[in-house]
Image 1 (cartoon, helix red, strand yellow):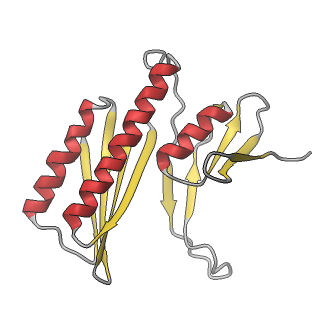
Image 2 (cartoon, rainbow, N blue to C red):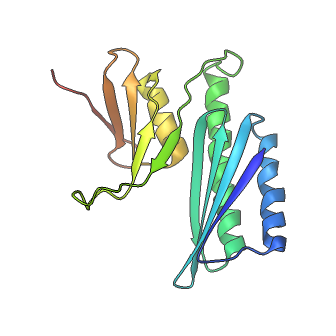
Length: 177
């Protein structure tokens, strides 16, 4: 598994880097198809933020945590990521898709917005859209830890957005023709 570190406002020493590499490589015991991981460590105003992102055969799993020490933030973030991987693994087993070769992968490409005419947009993400059921879209949204998710509805072929409305309820945006 390829592990990439991003440091913002902090220099990660070799001891902490080795610790993180050792711990993150244990994720493969939960899901063997993890291709790569990214660990972003940010230090801002006395607080450390650690964001761990894993590419599990094209499915992006993400967890983020804040703490007063980078090791604590990393450990909690990793714990959250492990929980999401277990949930995803369980989802695949329940749906009998583990060995079916079903590809519902997507990738995120971050690009910087250079146009000064639209100052409200500071990040653009390009997302590959694949057909999926709404239940699968909800699972994808939960796995990346976002409150919304854009997908192609397998039933209608339209681009839809699923979003979190409350603790256990969701909304669906469908285009009107």
